[in-house]
Image (cartoon, rainbow, N blue to C red; front, side, top):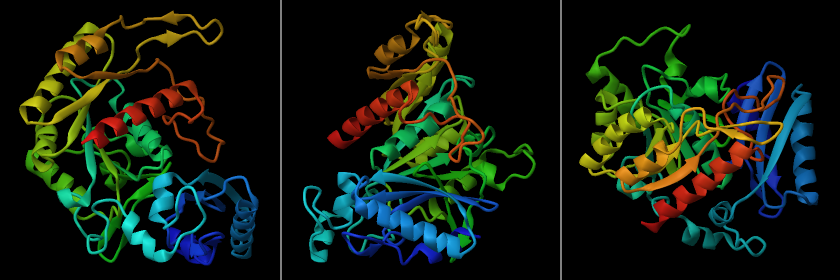
Length: 371
């Protein structure tokens, strides 16, 4: 079964209060199809009530009729923004359809549906995740910040711009590839994040042997030829350092912001300062610093060992005159391959690290929406 066939089967399933198709509202997300097993997320107005049970019964019945018995469903309550976009007052029941246009966010009002995400009128906020050197966990930070932003109800895209060292699809547990519809590439959605990566187009983990101009061309395709739909935030996982791709991104996105990732080690922070300096010299605001691998916490006793030293993130934030957004522990998600939502690198929302990423995401939203 393809994603398109699945959506066709589920299109008649309506949100009970709004009486609108969940598929057409894009409230059926994170679709994963693996052999005879399907998992997906349903956004709903009432996560605990009878309406949720009604929707679940309809979805399972329709998929069973199509021969799919192994179905894993997750339900997430709609955020205030999603309720407004659906034409519903967050504190009331469904409102008249005519009010919907008044609640659309900037850049997504009538007549702007086809605005390029690079156009300031699109309202998309671009955030580049950068580091001075490899091995500091920049991609781990990128995928977890993207997932955390999506958990808050934001519409999020993620471009794996580390074209030589692409890793985002594997880190997020993505096993499908983008489809093409009406000449446009459809990004793969995972954990509520729309993802595009060079890794989708490489066979057998072959190396990418390209020079600078080809890298810029691929990045431009990711912006221009992908049907991103409506987004609030676009994150870009940059290659480490200050090379061609970072420079291309700074030139393509004059209004983007940046987050610098480092470890506590003094040398790592010293090198990361170059990436921050490059952002500042190209008139990009540095939103903050994320200190990864800040410490190792003993699972049994809770004692913290500062394996890579201390203070590098705080010193870097002071150097760049910005905020230390988070200090994340050394570790890996407690995910098991048998789980329907398995991914090697994305922390669950209720885990300690997952909560830290959510707190960092809320800080980022507050900073971006001050503007």
